[in-house]
Length: 415
Ligand SMILES: Nc1ncnc2c1ncn2[C@@H]1O[C@H](COP(=O)(O)OP(=O)(O)O)[C@@H](O)[C@H]1O
Ligand SMILES: [Mg+2]
Image: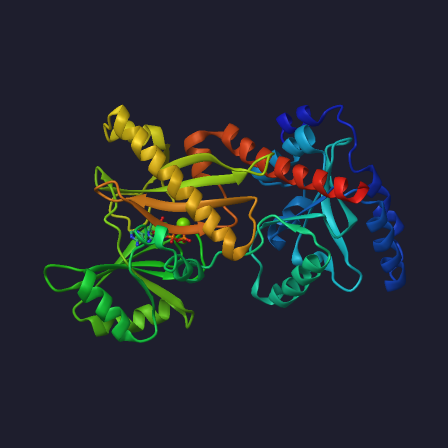
């Protein structure tokens, strides 16, 4: 913990006192005792348990007193505005049979992270990848959560093709979409490159542009194949004489996983740097959708993607573009309408989300183009462009939205 954190924590009431006893109670190992404990903990709940599912790596970092700064913010904000029983766990720390969770929580009384046993939460907030080996276990857990009517704050992943394919059936969103097909045979790629000259290949899942390749058919009739190599932090370029030569590379890149082919968006550029946008939206305390911040991401020069780069606010971008006040206002309204449509359409198919990160772009004529939806945004660009306060507000929104759901449940129960 850093000094600032300790200062903040000083003198705070120990929120999780209930759980201090839990680890001691669990000195025994028999499954009967665990079942009893789970039932006991379940009975004491007041719809106030907020479980954050993190990766195994992050779970162990917390137990070692090394929280990510976003996690620190979450516990501070929770302490200030929501006072949920807040704990962090990973898939392997769930006892599926007994419906009991080994979690890590922050004890404000002595400013340390501690391990304890918890019942299944009332709110589940997913913040981290599920490893291949844990997929079955995770599926079982979410089935149990649905049965128990636990609120899933980000109920599902938003696979690229699932979302794109679905949006293609919505007339008001069609104009924001680029032609996209699922790759099945090499001919699919050849046809798209012949037709559009520049295309993007995109994995059905993935983040940080790790599964993205840009292919451009140049005026010299060569194919330029580019991707961002995250491990080496540089753009890799391979030039092919024929389209057939590309196929083994593409196949090697996706290792048998499905991917889609998409017409390139003619992205806005400043000084040869491509620009796209990330909007962070949340449901707030009254349950309505609000925009927490829109950030413009500036790719590195020649990079096929804008990830891993600088960010500025949308207003700063508008200033750069020298838009008049009237133009700015018009574009703001267009963007807000688009974002609201995307959020609602996604919810219609995938369930209610407490928050969503939406990637989109403006082309050279300021038309809005959809890129993807994210159910677990790391909010990196939000922090870069809008600062820590915006991150804090995004966490407040999620917690207060959960609070409003809790109030509804308690009211229903008492009536
Ligand atoms: N059709 C496209 N045209 C132009 N650039 C694109 C296109 N699709 C993706 N990109 C670029 O690649 C980046 C990563 O793509 P995205 O679909 O958001 O994948 P990830 O899930 O890895 O973030 C985008 O932020 C954008 O800069
Ligand atoms: Mg993205």
